[in-house]
Length: 319
Image 1 (cartoon, rainbow, N blue to C red):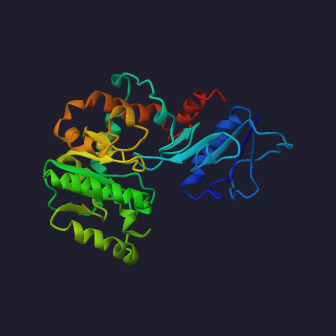
Image 2: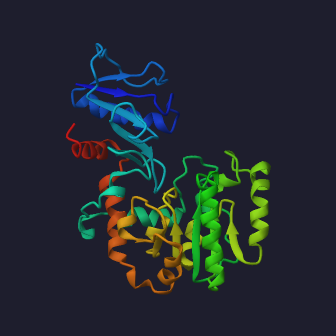
Image 3: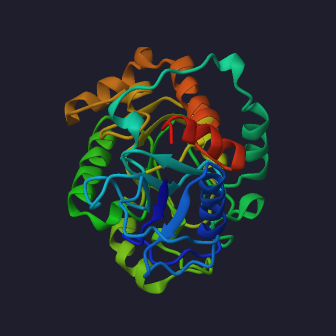
């Protein structure tokens, strides 16, 4: 049997990726697979064998999904809640995960051990970024003047690259303001900061017009402020499927999505703009146990972060 590592979306593994891919390779080797890779893939990893021109039994991809790969395989993607967690999926990477399309079976919450992890994350304020300058933890910028009982929108760097996303975002904000909702927007730090954690003047200039339009109407946080200092005052959180922050789940905040993220079966999914305000005004749809169940399952039964969790996850694929 052959396990082949593809360079389709990533031609080298840096200090974040290499340990993950080494663990995956080690597990496939333990299962008796011959390891091969594309010549273009720069990786000083395990010992690679000769596939003798045979079609691989398993192909490992990174940062893509099955709609763009020449041969179906398993797809590895970096995930939250903190650095070191990653997904292995038969469909793709976030948001193209198996549970986006089929709701999983959740274990009993009492059978999962996640409280200590969540408490440590809350205390340390660590986020999902692998860059220490964007993941300042307890040294995050202070959150000033955050209103109580606000509606929170989280925007990441992927969002700002799509004009239709900005149009939808503006419509949501205007709709909320028209109905006298207190609105807070948390822009992920990579939107305005460089990889060293400093303000990128070009990035900030691109956002200045938006910030000025919001001034006096919407509270914006765009530096390294932590969601852990915002969510305790949040009434409801709105996220689209490009945002893979898991912090709202840690605070049992009702979540509304207007797209199709992997957790869509456990939150309020709306399809049209006119559904938003009624969903905020009447939270009877909020099922805290179901929302917790998805989060607990996702972190403890789906994601991987070490050799034993990789072994457990690969059993799902019977490879």
